[in-house]
Length: 158
Length: 163
Image: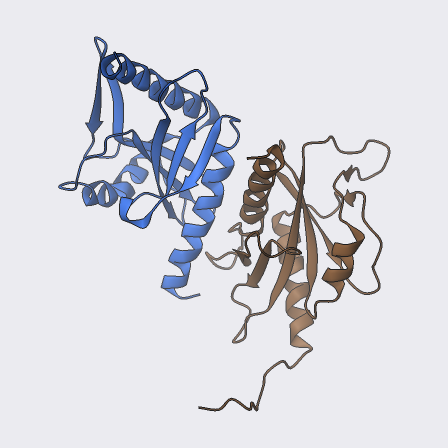
């Protein structure tokens, strides 16, 4: 297997692992992205009661060997750097990192949805702050995104 | 989107991830690299290449069947309640390559494999859980498919369409 093939393989396996984690929740729909977004998935949160489409982006990365969260942050720093100086995201975007052998899953925000005193902001991070990606943590992330869209809706829609 | 599409998509991802697990003791490589064939391919979901199996790349085909139903309780080992139509079985055995069905238990995220070969022609109403896609099974599957292709010289020495 050439290094190029290995990269393609890792990209394929990472997409499968991310799909498995995201589809454990019944309310997420995964869409392939256009290449020019630089992202791998656009994911919508199914909320029929909301007037806005609740969308977030996911960037996927993978490495062969197991890593600690600190090492994972270092692995992701070049990826975080790639987005500096580019056009800012206008919706939440996160990063998943998987290791192939142990199938560890890690999470970091690229564009984190924050609500301060009812005001929604998207904080664009330039350093990875990696945490293990568990089902509970994904639930927390989805809540955070929904809360941010609620705040956006309150500001935008009269 | 129909619910069956959602389960199927998740099932295919589970089958892909289980087939592509990196668990060899001798190298940081998987045994297999599956390739999605897309919705237009009626019979198979994946063409699966063997990794690190020599100069020529052996391969096999896989149809994925997914369920949320409980495993059967009466049989040992229990069986996964997935159905494969007789038409699909006949199409699979007609291929001059190894063909398999991977059954996926969607909520447990487990995958099981059976071979479709020889004179098989009847529909299947459930599959055994004896061959779960663990590292041991992946190694045995890799050896089985490699042995199939090793005994056949498929190289071509002539063609009408020369450049």
